[in-house]
Length: 220
Image (cartoon, rainbow, N blue to C red; front, side, top):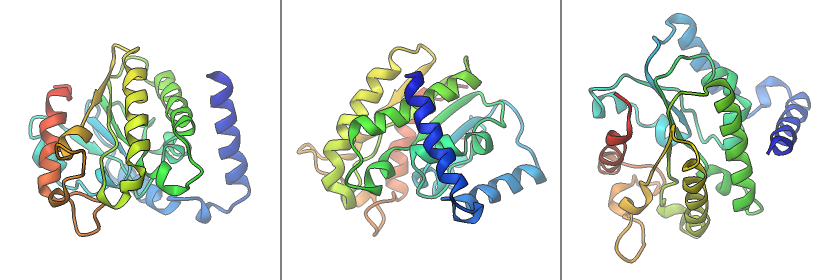
């Protein structure tokens, strides 16, 4: 595991030195989040949502969870590599009560060459780094969802979800939220009506399902 962490970090460093900051993926989006922090730094003890656009677009998440303080620092179509790259900007600055991650779907969508073992390596790298910074903060992973626009990738999502769930069972401070099984019909096909027209992002019905799954797992 240690060698995997070092290898992925080395690739990220080499990639960043080869580009100007403005060309690094999601650089501008992360700067906007940092600007928010500079104007009013978030209070400690909140539930930190991080990851990709399914969280980014959940702009009224606080309404869904009125008994929790939600700090949403998700951005764009980010991947697990982006979570690793920007951990000092959107994960490490805070004192969260709990960390909730939705990420991984875009890793597979970024290239046909991305395999389940590759995504697992990225996930475990992020998790190792996160745990080094937050050894006792509860962690919740939200399973990759069955996006209708990415139906060809669903077998990879399902396999990776199972592996991540099994991995997290080793940590009594971690939990796994299975939203995937709640978003498909009996035959395993995605529920089209809970998605927007892009067939990728969810509408209010989709987020209502997430609320039902996540709320019992959020720390009060």
